[in-house]
Image (cartoon, rainbow, N blue to C red; front, side, top):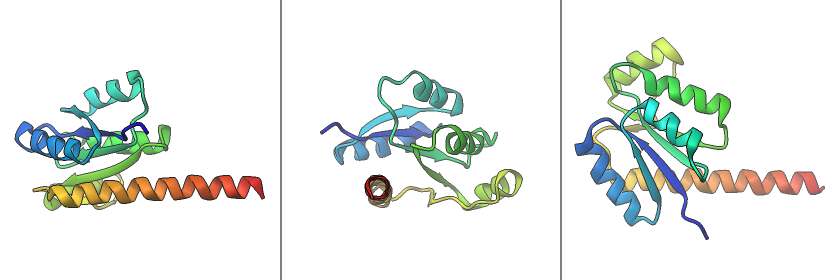
Length: 136
C-alpha cells in the first residue's frame, strides 16, 4: 500500500519542519511548501496525487486561503485542512469565504495527525459508498 501524501504549506520553518517530521513518523509521505505558489507547483507537477493539504491561513497575503478555494474548486479529490491563528483567520475568512480554520496554531501534532486520519477515512467511506450506489 502506498503512503498517503500530505502537502504541508507553512512559511515558518520552525513550525513546518517539526510537524512534517511528526507526520512522517505517522507513516505519511510529507511534501513541504513555503507558500501557495510552491504548493501549486507540487500539485500541478506531482507524480502522485496529494491526498491532504494542510494550509496555514494565518499568513499575511491570504494566498493560502485562495489556494484552499482553488483546490476545492479544481482539485476536489484533495482533502483540505485550514490552520492558523484565530485572529488572523477570522479576518481572512470574512474577506474571502467566511469559514473558520479547521486547526489552530500552535499545532498539537497528535491532533493534526488524528484529523488527517479522520479525513482520509471519511474520503474512503465516501468512495466506497459511491461504488455501492453505482453498483445498485
